Structures are given as C-alpha cells and as structure tokens.
Length: 204
Image 1 (tube, rainbow, N blue to C red):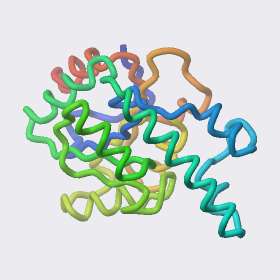
Image 2: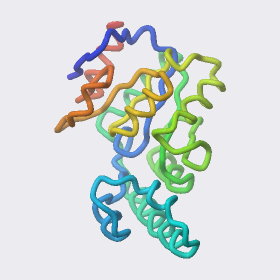
Image 3: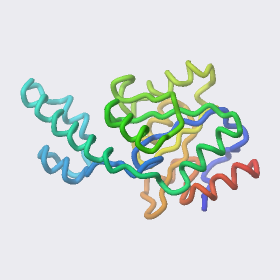
C-alpha cells in the first residue's frame, strides 16, 4: 500500500536515491544500545553528539563504539522485503540509482556486498556532510546533471525526509508498520515495495 500526500507523479521522477539501513537492508545498528553505551538521550543525534566532543580521546572512543555497532549490524544484514525487486524494476526503466547513507564506508560496503545490491554510486558520511545536510543529494544531482526537484529520495527516518526537503527533492518514506507523525510531510508513504512497483508501473 502507498499513501499519497502531495501532487507527485512518479513518471516525472528522473532519478532515485535510496537510504541504505532500514530502507534497502535490515542493517540498522542497535541504536538503543548504542545511545545507552554513549550515555546520550534516546532519539538524540549520535553523529552530532560525537562531533560535539572537544576532548580528542573521548571523541576517538565514541567513534570506536559507533564503528563497532555499525560493523556488527552489517554482518547480519538481510534484504528488506521487495527492495531487490524495486531496484530491478527501476533499472528496467533506465532510471539512475544511488545510495546516500550516514553509515561509514566500510559498513555500507559490507552490507552492499553481502546482499549484492546492484547500485554503484554510493555516498557515505565520509563523502558528504551527513544527513540531514543536503550535500549528498546535491553531489549526486551534479553527477547525474539533474535538478534536485526531479529526484525521489527513499528513506525510512526523519533525517531522510529532512535531507530531501533541504535539497528540494521529493521524498518517499518506507514504513511497513507504525507511521510517525513527521511522515505527514513526505510526498509518499510506502508500506510495501511491491505496491510501490505497481503504482510506478501504472504511471501514477
């Protein structure tokens, strides 16, 4: 099932950028455990916290903890239902595809290689300012020579929505279960990728 929240027409989209963890792959780190180990509040921005640490040793320690959690989650990554088929469908339509993730390159590539995700353009937080900063989308648009307004960003979290908004792109949020309040600001809510493929195939 998909829910439309704007006038977006899928056949107007000229390129698609995906988040990785939770969107294409079940590879999200244990954020509850990670925040607890770092000693920060639930829901707080982990990367912003690490960047705020002025003590070099404390920052190094925190980065090591984050690294270990990210690598551990990548080792057990599995496909999100219907994500492989969605990628194959979009490729059959000759749409350029990319991945933009807040993950580190090592963990992202582990997930991509483990699952055989057939997307070669991948930007991590080492390649661009981390989401919700729009730089990642902007860099991909420059490479594709497309306007941000012609891009659909597909993600599963608030940062994904904010990134698309900050870049001036369209946004589809994947929520197979509970839909959070902030999702109302997306263009599309996607509960099932198979339904998403059907809607795209119909040119809706």
